[in-house]
Length: 289
Image (tube, rainbow, N blue to C red):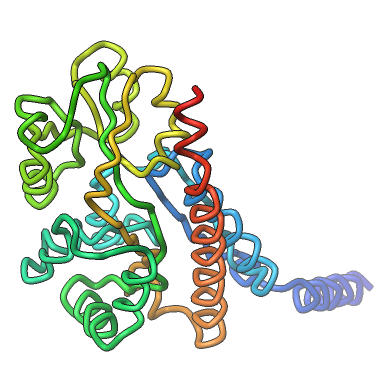
């Protein structure tokens, strides 16, 4: 009889094991999405659009958003993608040019006339060649270009500015990188590399004299609290890319890749629409503040 009870126990255990899926099959694919955009900015908020779209279509993917440089300091996201320490991030043309110098011309002042001009370029064969080259040389897949805005100059103290010569000696925060420094020199300032989360305090304490960003980002970061003047230079119409590490991308199934790309395009479209609408009134709002 003991042997019969033992057999019954083993049979029940076998049935139970077959009825329970392996633990590894229940594990989700973690996709961390990092951005330097302030949490209140449209770019950071568009990350939630991406998360919702992906997780609704593919519940096995767990999208974890980290806006405001919460996970990686600004300027370190691209190397993190390339080392396999991060799955997704936003990426600028400046970061591309650091590794593919021939694409540095995308960072020059007054290259694009406006938003529509930039969109047409990246939707053209020029944009296709750009995307293909970035994937081949950097190991990063551009999922969708999106609009960061048109950058303007913002000063801690009001001055009479009529041209680049009037900005001589102005310590202007710029993101790190040689093309950013060149852009700063082109508009007449003394460029001072600094990560975005450090800018508010630096303006407040006088460590820097000013910063330059699209007004929508200035508003989200509340720079009006620590500056006195906004100068409409419109020196850079800036695209930015929603990007994913190629090794991670290649491991996804064809269905998962379609969902992730569609979600990136949807979030980019939302960001563009919101930012363009906000640009119509944000400067007046900043002036009132």
